[in-house]
Image 1 (cartoon, rainbow over the protein chains, first blue to last red):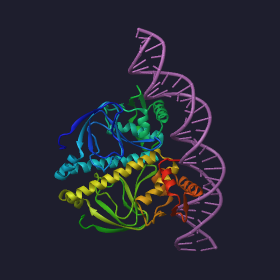
Image 2 (image 1 turned 30 degrees about the vertical axis):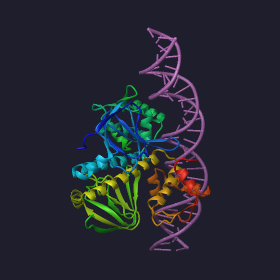
Image 3 (image 1 turned 60 degrees about the vertical axis):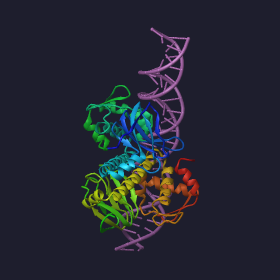
Image 4 (image 1 turned 120 degrees about the vertical axis):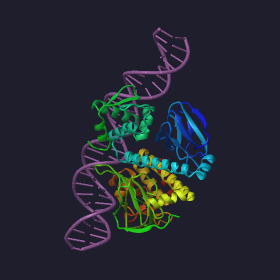
Length: 203
Length: 203
DNA sequence: CGTGAGATTGAGGACACTCAACATAGGTGG
DNA sequence: CCACCTATGTTGAGTGTCCTCAATCTCACG
């Protein structure tokens, strides 16, 4: 489909691409996870998305990357040259259709996240975030047990909160019996229905 | 390019499509302006984007619209049947490439807006918003004179603020000499450089 | 003019942030 | 093997930005 990509490995925290750099390659996550983010000059950061194995970024785009990408933990990526991608795009309508569909999915996710960032409370944001793992980013989750690969700072920067608010809100959800907490990375969903209601503002 | 579309007219506030409805058509704005938005069950609203003449939505997508669209003022739209769009997509690689590029542009705008919603202050949001009109939505603006076609409520829902905060922040920018205000729809940029710095957090 | 919708201004409050202390866990070196 | 150190996360106290509620203003329209 994509021709042969080169496999590259990244250690935790390593940079894959930087916002503004010339877009020379597209990538697909093979193992591990990435964060995509944008930053302001003073260092404030907005995580745009987390990428699980199988997901891609940079396949389409302008002349430069519009976000930075970093490894959350050790991970392996397939890398495709931009010229090869564009050749595939021209020669293979099926490939073009798939890219278009992937772009659509990214766009719809971005829209949902805009609603979250602009209009949801901290509690609603956290509830939505936890459900995201059940619905999409199943990083080795069984039905109700979530394993978060990223730090509290990453979560905070994804939801437009501070790490303290993330921590406090998780504690409150635990006290209310909606979730249970193991190590900082482990979350167990105890009352799914209530959590889903909370994520949509029903409370 | 798109075959022949049917032209339809909408009055101020009229609905074009509703989030969740089956995606039967795509649209292009001919005259006037649209707002795209998502809403929570309790009525909280996030405006996803404003569309100026020439811009499109719904050309690609899933089975349903993921946002609602309404006319801001009286406007004319070209409407294309989904089946026709998909036929054009399959038969015309040039058209597919243009759609892909439009999707990319939408996605990059959404990313920039996520940074704004999650990490910018009210002042930075308003400054960014005003600059948006100089850079993209030139709704009949000369170089420094902006005419906002939408209400304060629309602006607030676009920036993740309340109408009161929008109003107060505009007043503060006026008092600081960065802008001048005519009628509620008219804004004159007086110190572009300072406004640009403010939009990026430089202050 | 009277009316009503939209915008502005004011007073007070709440939610999330800031600053800070403490806890926990992993890693390193004596 | 344990003391130490640093990362990361949690909890606490106080503050501030933006929100809520409410009054006033403006202006288009009947």
